[in-house]
Length: 142
Image (cartoon, rainbow, N blue to C red; front, side):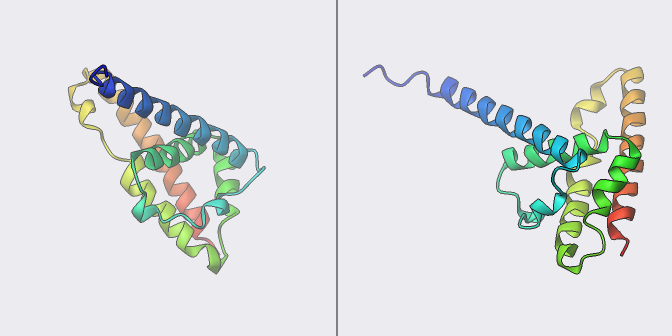
């Protein structure tokens, strides 16, 4: 008995737990990739056009955002490791799609920010775009 009144709270807690797990795993994998313990090629089986849910999107967003925060030389090295191979072309295309769809979008919340915070966000987005351009140029080289 008890009517199940806590279901909404349980669902919210479950969602938060899944979000935390996805973020932490993403941070771990980004660290392994930027320290060259593993390569982005581990994601060659992922279809970035059809990620199954928001948790998967968050997972990959966390990975790529963290990689883009690395030094430019590290970014180049990370993406060089998946350049050139015809077998990895679908992966490179998928990553490029993911960048366009998830990384450089302006959020709705930004519209309501004070002008000085908007300026900071604009500068951060410009830096991110430059790094994405560098990554894409690097991984498209043969």
